[in-house]
Length: 532
Image 1 (cartoon, rainbow, N blue to C red):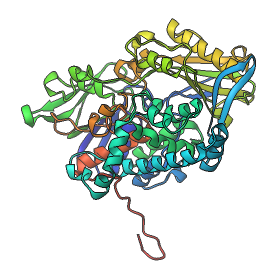
Image 2: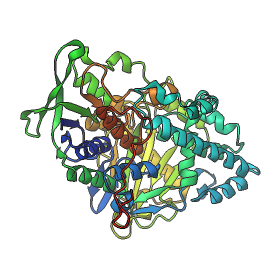
Image 3: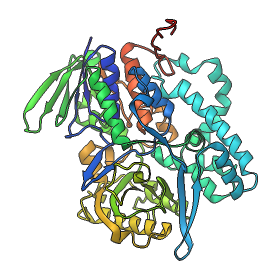
Image 4: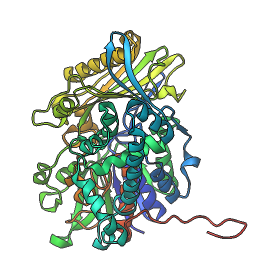
């Protein structure tokens, strides 16, 4: 049994703590904020409960696997609702007061009919596209996502070598071009390209390998955990505690202490301060940082022990920042389903503003809107609605902080106002602004202050080819023995499922397990046969 300190009680930190505690280690989690969850946060006010982070429950198999590793199941821990429709896409109205929209249903057959109605022949093209996406997803899970990349042999199996020409083609092609080659309809292309934003990148630069995302929302469907993602965080944290992990909040780690020199350097523990400013030291044989990797490397380690120094980060590409807008609205909003996407017509201009050489807040901006109150009665008072609005913007802390009821910094509140007006006009709710009773905003500076986020980004390094899979920052320090990394800013990448996978990669690293796929899960013996 090793003494383990986990820095940060975000999803990755809690998931890692749970796996390591269940594996027999003595684990303590130190979280700088007053609550757990990290970017998967929550705000409660006047009877509303807003998730302030993830809201799409995709890759259910990854959740199932992590829960199984903890001796339980997603069915036991969560109350999942399959959303139908999966989401709705809004475009600028063609006539005043008349929304232009496309509702994306649940299930492959219904989606195929939708595509065929938009573009004759698109159903057949979609079938081939989704088959390819499923193959890419299966290969990714089996050989890339769970892979610690500590053995070259994990990538030289017969199956990988046979698939290599196809995989190299997907890696060398851009997602937007890949979709455009198969579909003529601009809106269908946008539906297939927009998942790149959830990976923190531009569909014009994301590898076509990420068309695997379409297998998730267009085929497997989109679910919602009742209680929101905050309920998911609660369950992950509870399972970690039940396994023996001790979680301490208001505990800001200020440095990772090491012993030894040169190649013999290894962790000795961490120094941290509590809410009163009192200093503490927690001894450790192993330290796992679930905090932002840039902060971990450049603020918690001395220069000579940094695997990823500032000069390394200067050559990296950040994913987008975000202005988040949480709205409590009086009255019903049937015009909006659980998930909505608002797509501007000038797609290139939108992404040039976020990722280009002259970054600025897009105007107009393509935005995402979640109405969890469409599915969950507990997130808003009676006769009210809960809206979460995400506006992708450049990762730039100069955009500022958010605040309550319009009290945030000018650029943040201006962006929020524009998003509210867009929702009102495009969805046909002209009195939306007058019906807002609660308004909370967050900006890139909040991501920096609350999560030490590199450049104030909402996700982490973008998933361009040079920052994906084995090319992404990996899960163990090359200069400090016993120091590991988990979370969205390291491998395998951004998103809650990736954070759960990163926890398992850390477990593999500590065990000395070099396997590529998910670890086998022991099935309890049944009383009748004793079989496994």
